[in-house]
Amino acid sequence: MPRTQTARLMDGTGLARRILETTTATAADIRRRTGSSPCLATVLVGEDPASVTYVRMKRARCEKAGIESRHVALPASVSTAGLVETITALSEDPTVHGILLQHPVGPHIDERAAFEAIAPAKDVDGVTMHSFAAMGFGLPGFVSCTPGGIMRLLDEYDVDLTGKHAVVVGRSAILGKPAGLLLLGRDATVTYCHSRTADLPSIVRQADVLIAAVGKPRFIAGADIKPGAVVIDAGYNAGNVGDVDFDTALDRASLITPVPGGVGPMTIAVLLAQTVEAATRQLGVG
Image (tube, rainbow, N blue to C red; front, side, top):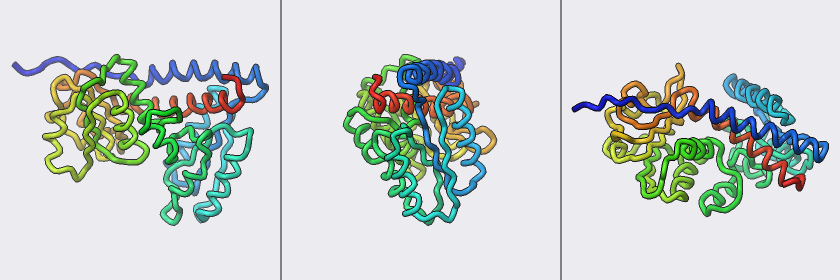
């Protein structure tokens, strides 16, 4: 008989709200005990409309959570050396506890060099090689925010990853790759795929847990979802469309994240939570 059950939606908005409530309370406690507020510095190169919107949204969320937001706007013409100098100064500033470099920075800039100028203790976005290695080795450090949000969602819905086959479709350094490392650290068996993987649907059909992070609208068909699979759609494309064909996946998956309202809110919640955690460590109030 055809499957008629509809997947349960994973409410990232609600979980993010609860995380931010805790983060706000912790920020207030830090301010009461030290006289200083946790501070997140955002660095924006140029005036890309989407980036300007993202930074404005993050700054608004900081204000609501009692986190100081320090914004550094640089011209699109800034050199790699100039950007590195700016980030290095923020890394050395004791009043700044976390640093976010908004992507993209422009094709003429060595983005990796810019990321590596962020002090590991302030890498609350989890983008440096130090943070990547910490995720791989299971050591203390800051996780990449979107993968970290995905793991919190899986925990919220009591998804047991032990022995499960997790398929990650996407290989970016701040999403697909670290997501696979975090899943592996929780005893899942991980397969990495991408847009050029041969016969991708046959691999997707094996996934007990599917992480879609390839950046292509409706790239994964619902018919290729294994019945009962947990589907995390980390894609966000024009028209509020994810990387999974949501409508056709609903009657195949057991749990699925909506777009929007799934992974997106979790990313910002983890960023702010890690900023407050960084401030706690740097101010010695942990």
